[in-house]
Image (cartoon, rainbow, N blue to C red; front, side, top):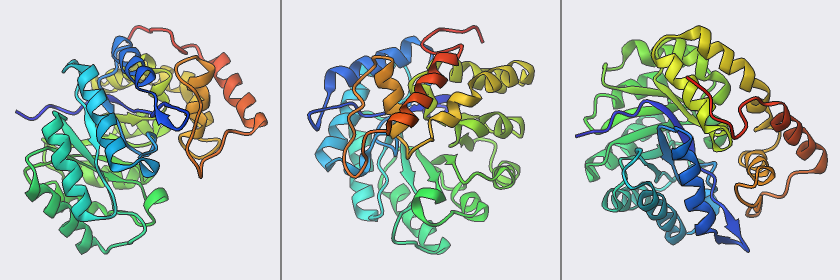
Length: 299
């Protein structure tokens, strides 16, 4: 039975220590997330620095998160790449490891046509029974998957959701208007979660929830029950923090914030470098002024 992918999912950072995966910190992050009320976890996405991890490291991170989660929340494993064959292999591994779904990014650098995207995702869907979450993020990939292509893919049985991070409410609306009722649309931008949910989106795959999982979960829950007064209050309370998470390239800011809060180190892998002191001060100030930093809130 397919797990319903609605609510707030954290695009998990990957803690490093001396350029190795910090398993102890990663397991602690999973516990922090679940105890704070997050609805699901997404290891090995952009925020997890998957682009600079080896295949073995990516597999290990996914396995650790699934093991530590123990079925308490769904795990959507990041398996996408710009190589269809490699993506198929990674998705098959995620299925065998026990993931609930796979997050598959639009192929980057190659810049395929819309027909190429259809062929790419169809090949992956035909290779595995694992539910697929499409991931459209043109700012990273260099191309955007059109609403028309998304709707064509939404008719494939194993394509169950999309993380839509194109920044267009119009595109999200077009997808929501035309997709099957069983198809889930998740915001890929923290600050657009509220407006997207107001037109029918089902939640968010969030960067900010690495540090404020309870608040992002409460925002998604309020949106799902159409309580937009509460959702708007949470949105505005988090807005400065959401913006601070993108002062520099993701995940530099959120890893810096996690370090300030003592969740893990701020170690990154090249070509990402430590945040400059002025921006670090801005992140620290946003954390200081956020009402929800590491504090539970009532939905």
